[in-house]
Picture 1 (cartoon, rainbow, N blue to C red):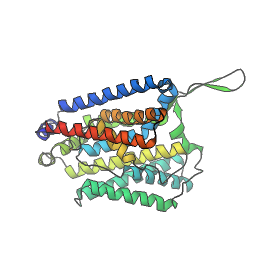
Picture 2 (cartoon, one colour):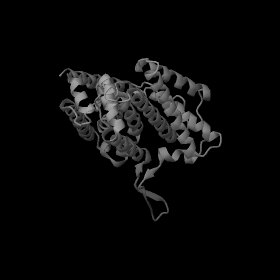
Picture 3 (tube, rainbow, N blue to C red):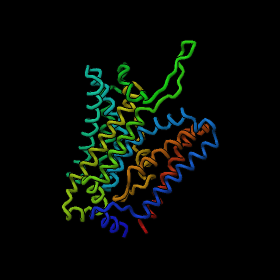
Picture 4 (tube, one colour):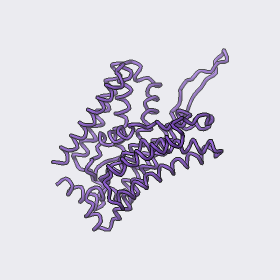
Length: 341
C-alpha cells in the first residue's frame, strides 16, 4: 500500500511527501536539536565558533557523498563504491597535478573519473541486470585496488599550496593586526567545503523537486514498472543517478585530499556507510521512492555532531562505531515500520 501511495504522488508529478516520511524527517531534525543541546551542556567548548566550524568541515565530505547516495537510494538502488571512488578520484587529481596540469583542470579530471566509475555502475545495473549491491561492491574493490596500484599504496605529496585551497580556505575570514605586529584572528571564516556543500545541496534539491529528471527519479523508485509504462526512461534515469553519485564522490575526494594536501589512496574507507546512514537517518527509504536532500543534510550533521561530541567526551573510536551502528539500525527499523503502514 505504501508503494501504491508513492506511485500516485510521483507519477502524477505531485510533490507531496507521505505523512510518515515527513514525520521521519521531523524526528531526525528533533534528534539533531537534542544532540546539539545535550553536547552543549556536556561541554562548554562544544558550542564555540571554532568547534562549530570544525563540525562543518568534517561533515562536508559525508554530506557530498550522502547527496549522491540519496539519489541512488530514491531509485531503489544502493552505491557501496563511493568511498573507494573518492580515493581513486583524489589519486587521479594528484597524479595529474604531478604531471604538470593546473589545479582546477586536475580537480575537474578527478570529478570526471568519479563520474566514469558511477556510469560503469549504472551500466552494470541497467544493462547487465546485476543487483546494485553486487555491482557497486565490485566497483568498490576495483576502484580501491586501482588507486593502490597506481600509487604503489604510497601517498602523493608535494602537490603545492594551491591544491590545499579548496579544503583549507575560508570565506569571510577576519584578521586584525595587533600593536605588537602579530595578527589576531577575529573570525576564522566559513570553510570552503561547507560553502561548497551548501551550493551542491541547494542545486540537487532543486533538481530533485523542480526538474523532470528529479520527478523521474522518484517515479522509478516508487514503482518501476508503472514509471516505464508512463513513458519514463527508467534505465537512463538510473544511469543518471549512479553517474551523479560517482561525480559527487569525485568532488568529495578533491575536498578531502585538498584538506590533507596529499592524495591518499587509503582514504575513504567505510565512508560509504556513513553516507548511507546520513541518507537513511534523514528519511530516505531503502525501498525507494522517498527521500530529500534536506533530510540527508540533517542526517549528515547528526553523524558529524555525534562523532564530534563523542570525541570531546573522550569516547573511543570503537565505541563511536557501535553508537553509529545502533543509530543506523534504528533508522532502518523506523523506515521498515513506515513502509508497513
